[in-house]
Length: 266
DNA sequence: ATTGCTTCCTGAGCGC
DNA sequence: TGCGCTCAGGAAGCAA
Image (cartoon, rainbow, N blue to C red; front, top):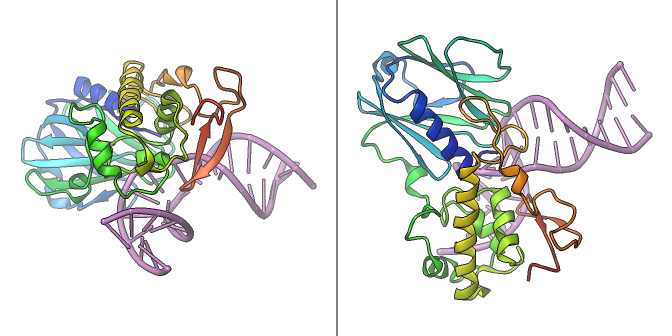
């Protein structure tokens, strides 16, 4: 499940591999994968002039003033190939380049999407996103403001993309464990000091995870089809015991698994 | 305004 | 061996 560090790793890889390449075609292999797809513009996308990340979205701008917005959801992969070497079982779309290389969008569960917009179009899903957690503006005062009147558990709030853009289930678990804060604690009950700890641990975990090319639990791969390494540094997600030897508890919050240590996290 | 449930989708893992 | 069940989960859409 690609979260911010995994998407950042993919974007870094794309910048190495496909920046300045000319798109020959974009093919939809499974219907519904590409939104706003217009056959006429297909050959006219042009050259890829920039590749960026916003939250868990990948944004590629082209020389003919289009932008491709890609969300991988849980199992989406973008794999760059010079020659078709492997068979991928769940190809949803193909981006073909002039030099006979291609970017394959493979996605088992088919939740991932590609959207096409004109460069200056407003994109609703991006407009709604909260702050980037690795930005300077993301601090305890921002969280305090956002958490006023929020009775939801902190775990759920960390996953809310309108508040923080890019966190997913694994990192939300890891951040709260490292901050020693219970995932059940209500947002509006957290002091500035606690929020400061959350901010610090968020940055720390994300920066370390980016350094190790993300976390591979099952499906996530880099553009070169390689796994990440941060799974070796997980302290609570899918663990049985915490560092102090206490039994990790597993519960459901908002339909997702929460792992935490009831002793260490208060 | 906020919260919580359902839907999308498929493969892995489990018990029998 | 194979069947049926549960689980994994990001975000949209809708109901309360």
